[in-house]
Length: 199
Image (cartoon, rainbow, N blue to C red; front, side, top):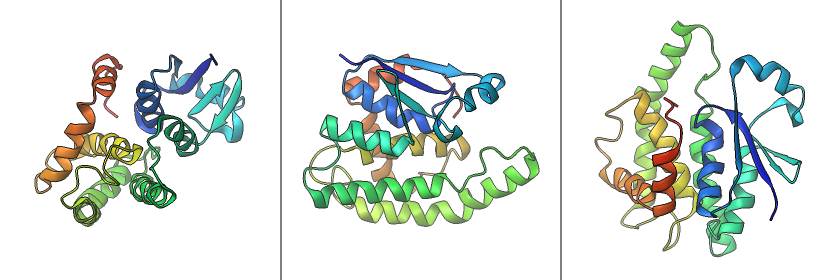
């Protein structure tokens, strides 16, 4: 059995999709959470100076969504056909494009607040409407069973709701999807035991 070590900050952030997939696969791993104070030293030791990193028997893998794709295929959550896999990736990329627009590392609070407010007030409603239409009357975003696109929706929407509590009021189907993911037993267990962090 390979040894897995996940390196990231003590937040959900970009590592949470990896944690969901490892939980789903029932893979034991070392959840190595570093402090911001340690980041400058760690940064010099990881590929491209970015985290999360998933080490598999000491071999570092980088880029959260690349790692996600690897684990999702292993878990049977990537889509049942090539076409489904493309649709799954498209939903994930759409969500990631939006989440990447937030200036998470911006130190100027006024700039942060302004951009966050702009995205949540003016841009998020269109994205949510599109996701709602895409989901339609289906139980899951793609195909007839859960995929990691549904996982990623739960993770992203959890963060968005921290930033704007009423964001999903007009989207009960998206809320229902979030709850379905959170009720998958291994995901529910992980949510109960994970460290409590704001993001």
